[in-house]
Image 1 (cartoon, one colour):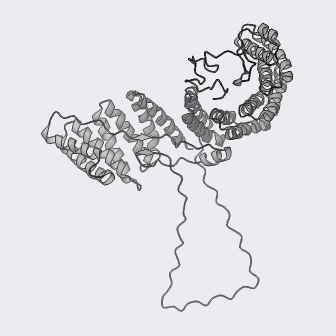
Image 2 (cartoon, helix red, strand yellow):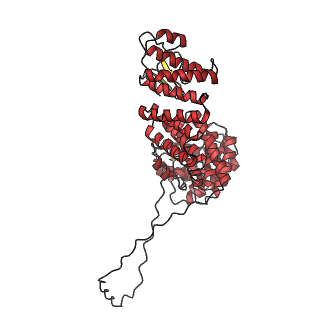
Image 3 (cartoon, helix red, strand yellow):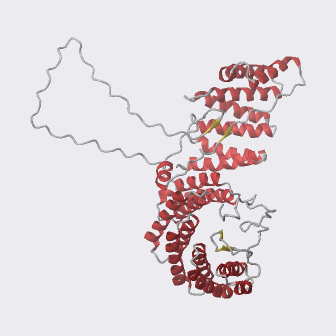
Length: 495
């Protein structure tokens, strides 16, 4: 991905978000910055036409009709120069220009563009379409009603990227490390990124011959022909390299925007930005720490979507890179090991969850010492795993050890300690040791949880209480079993 494309995508995303929120002054500023980058992509690039059009839209909303008209005219000129020009593009731009001139009482210019727009839209939509009829009403008002105000402009909506199907890691890596092609438009005025058109070499021109000359005799066959080696494969030309410092700045911009989407649970848009970040950082090599950070965030998104195979691919890729670069005894490796344990736990693969859970405990004890709070959380998670499988005898000593560490590391009243007490109390109830359960936590409600996520387990009759608030986000349930905010099903323990 070239520098211009990467920066254009950042400004485009920011401008579209600002426009969606109605802050057209901010959108205008970002579209102006995007325009600087789009001009470097070439005069006949669809991204230039789109940027000019969206800048004009922002200026229409701000009543900067002169500026908007100038940018819309240039946008129309670029659209007309494109080989794949669309009736919808041309019709929309002509209609908007007609309305802009109409609003400025420039009757002759408005009449010309209304005529063009009606002709184009009749070809695209048909004579009786409501949009065509509405334009005819505007056209008729030019000379009959001086007080008539043209309706709002037609806004061109775009999807930032096509919504991806679940990707395996190889497909993701193979498909995104190429220069982004110009934008094109599918039906209904939404444009998305097209597939790259394969280059077809022109057919060789046959040598000219004299038609009057006799045909040359065919050469005699060679009894011992020399084998001709196959042509060497051509290496595609890499996009121009970007300075490392600039890559880091752009990657941070993608990261910040993606994290905002993740915080609002807009996983589709977050994934698009993380994929852009992956394409941007890949030329710096897998040893770059931002590369693994990007992989792990993509894995986290797919984990939240419950696409466990794709999530596993991302996390395993990051794990193997970290082990190869940093060695197996490293804090960063321990973090990824914990993510893998959580992945397998939530995906129901308890055998692998136990393997990575134990590995995480061993690593953290070596790295942080036997009384570290992180270690206590990992021991709690492992106890949760055994508890979930009703391996109560294996879970109990882990709960006990984790509780001892958490009391020292966090204090007896810390939420981490309280959460562990609830889990430990529930284990005692499952083992029918009710007095001990009451001593541990009189508030135990038949649920267990580590730091991974809450899980529901069967409790003895009469020992569980109906939840009042979601155990994940704290939203009041109002008697329901599924949280209206985060979607957590309190009866099944799954999202």
